[in-house]
Amino acid sequence: MMQNRLLTPRHIVRVVIVFVILTVVTQLWYYGPPQSLASFGAPAGSHPIDHLIHEAKKTQKELLAKRTHDLRSTADAYRKRRGRHPPPGFDQWFEYAKAHDAVIVEDFFDQIYHDLTPFWGLPAKQTRQHAKQLPFTISIRNKEMQNFTNDKNWMSIWHGMVAEIKDFLPDMDMPMNVMDEPRLIAPWEDINKYVETSQKSRNIVPTQQVIKQLSPLDVDNDDLGPLKLDFINNGAYWDTARVACAPDSPSRSVKAAEDFTGPPPYCTDETSQQCRPDASIWLSYKGYVSNWTAVKDPCLQPELRETHGSFVQPLSQSTTRSLIPLFGGSKLPMNNDILIPPAMYWAKESLYATGDTHGAGWEQKQSRVAWRGGATGGKHREDNFSRFQRLRFIALMNGTQVRQALQASDKPETPSFKLQPYQKYLGTAGQHMDLGAWLDSIADVGFTDLLCSIKHEDKEDHSCPYLDPYFQLVKGIPLEKMYDFKYLPDIDGNSFSGRYLTFLRSASLPIKATVYSEWHDSRLVPWAHFVPMHNSFVDIYGILKYFIGNAKTKADGKLVTENGHDKEAKELALAGQDWANKVLRSEDMLIYVMRLLMEFARICDDKRENLGFVGDLE
Image: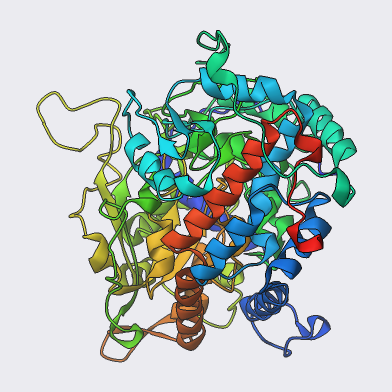
């Protein structure tokens, strides 16, 4: 088990942005040229990404082999994976899915059971009463949607989504989280106890003992006032969150950082890997993400406490340690919110949707990287901005800033970083490459709004006194125009990024870094449908070098790229688009929500242990 120690805070007096770039750029300089892949079944001399793509295709094939096509095999797959009979109404759910040409693989619904399993450890009455008492609730009675008074944020869109399937659903109350950030963090010990209770109730009940109809919802007759809960509204969010990590996990005992000046800490002792921002590189294969689930998990990566805005200083915080039914669009792996498709994914017209517009064909796209957005991610200030993921990413992709950082490194060692030859970092020891010029030629990235905590007294724009020396605002690019670029990085904002789905549906290639979970995670295979990226971005140059190629200056002084893998990029982008059009459609969202709410209704029923569908067995 990897141990972690806290560093003594250091005050960095030199230009912070230079150190930020150097810290992250040099992290991969410790990893030498790729070794032979012969032992992994890949051709000798091939790139690690070749191996990862090869393995991802195998994973995708194995996933599709589990597809079911009729009610009997689908119900059987459910019982084998869930240890219970399907919920009442399962036959209607299946017919709806088949009528809408759904790809049915039981694994696709794993997130539902991850989210709902702890509620089997609570009394059914408690859960259904809490659902009635919470604000911002979507309710169904007698197949009719009930009016709601708190039309905040995305409520009306979620209400419309559930209304599409109301005829298939029983009476229920569905409390919604209208904040960007998730709200629930129960201690690991509590959740573990609830899950153990749930496991004891898992049973394939004899057919003759199965109850096929849900009980009438009785909460409307209860004299219930508003639910009184304690919420944590301040303090270090990392300390709030880490109690949800297992006792033996790397992050559980690591306290929140207090000093966020300068770049993320970096050990001067070469033999120690314990406090490096890339300490979780063990989740990778030769420097590239191989365990996507683990690389998103803060419980396995204490370094995220001071490298991701959600833990440095979230935009807002209102967290309870109580396990209550609360539905939302995204969450951290340690949160206990119940995931549904985000409202911006369902909205037909929004900043995050482009309809059927996917840009030009692959050959007509620019072989470059495009990113636009605001400097979101939390409340950045002058003394912590270097720790925010979007600010760090844009700095790393800016050729001018990278050149300045490299030129400023007149000493090979400082208390904050150790600079090693760039050729070793790229694994191309025999070839010189001007990193700054390369980035200038391949990257079109920048902020349209710095979202500053301190405004200029004499300006009414989106600039920022403490960021202006390092970041220049750029003109926005309409979302549909971004599809004219082949490579689209997607970085967390205040929570998940709402552009991810439309990127997947495009014919461009998404490069994704996140710590957030979404409803569709079990449906997507990294390196088969998108390119996964580490949250430290230590792999971004290697990823782009693999796909776009090296930089080379011709005799006429023109910079060109060569030795890229455009064919592999095209195949991956089009495979992701094709898959998204099969399993991430609006119809698939409804199929997911219908299954989720049928399961939730059963959990809220006092007779839940005997409730089920057995029509295929009779």
